[in-house]
Image (tube, helix red, strand yellow):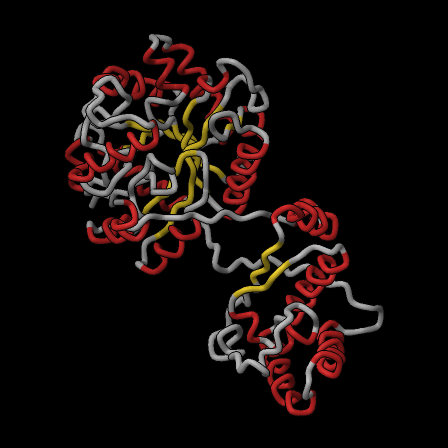
Length: 437
């Protein structure tokens, strides 16, 4: 019985204005077509990885985490005229947790240090962070395929051999695609020849940018938005066929009937990739606590002192404070309150205006230790909206700082915990149909 097929080259909506696969629909679609594993490989970024991972787990689909990286052979640090065109696609998939961490390192360096029109890495950087990764020759935009299109077979073979050495024996694959494009047909035999001469296994992929064949036209509109072009402009960049969708295993089998091993090898790659993220937890930084004091004991002392100093009726609010402290101790989030209290105090000391929004205002402990400035008892605010003993999840204290001095807060946090332990996050906004119109 042949092995099942696995889509290893897929772009979600996080390939911004290029991919049109929404993660829930993509995962559900793969499951409905009988696939028990699926990969994510957005262009140069890993924004969607956690959402994809959790959605796959929900549907009992094995998540394969990857990225389609941009490689600048001339060096990721070179940023000058013509350099934006000198970058090629390379599909990277995480084989294990070390590989996933290397993917994170590569994408971070690509965005912070290598960004020039797009996030870029290079060969030397890849050599340093290749452990635990699988690489493939990717699409027509790759180094191997571009050399073949120029007629440089020896150069293409050399590049494939170089990548095979970088990733190690059995971790580099020749990728075959067929979107009914003339260029893909032209180089197919040469790709197969490279795989045989270098003993590199082949895989079949479909570079899925949207879910169904009928999504090709909406996807074309998405590309027009990206480029600021009109759909009517025939000379603009566009996908030449409507074959870039999540095809069924039967469709892929028929498309590559002359290379059944390319279908089977996708399942082999899926078996090689085993990354478990939900079992990993980053340790909480240590708050600043006086010598000889236990962390939670110190939080309790601060809260009781603040109760007597800040609350109009401390005796009437004591039971509420003890209840909150009990919940915080049981859920293990005492250190978090002490850390946020540090941010608040440092901000006040610098005379920077800030405000706390959301459910954190319902915590009396937050008020007593100086995180918030509203007494939740006086305004009858509910603590359980913020931290519920029946549903243990990380509390979230949202703090807004005045725009003109926000950089000072980031500088303080960076100096306090170290540059390697501080990250900024991104928020994605989406438009519903009515808002878009």
